Length: 167
Image (tube, rainbow, N blue to C red; front, side, top):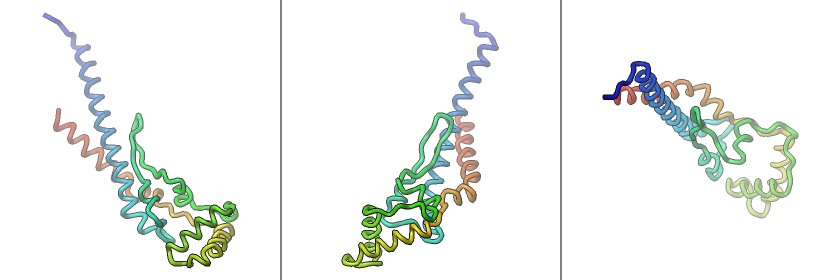
């Protein structure tokens, strides 16, 4: 016969319950992060002011979520995401050939310029960006302010209800 004292049993069950609770909380947080990334793409980017930051879809496609040791996160890994979110102050950009060429290609895709005048249009747009800056779209900031707390609450509640039902 093996005897287990009450303190050892309590410690064991506490550890098991803590681990299950922690796992459920992480699942809930990851679910909330994924939901936030989706909400940003379908609700906040289309309504961004002064206009949508969409050309080829790279910014939209770069939204995602992941797990950390003590939680989850959502972010955008596109190289230009910080400029879309926070904007660019006037005078901060240094237009060069690569920037002018990228703007020229964008201008052709958007029908702003034809291929023959695209470089000139790219130059003038780059100079305007340098002098005026780029206004922040702040889509993540808006989503965090509007719905983050509610989404996290709902997803954590869902996972904790699942955990309670399984015990």
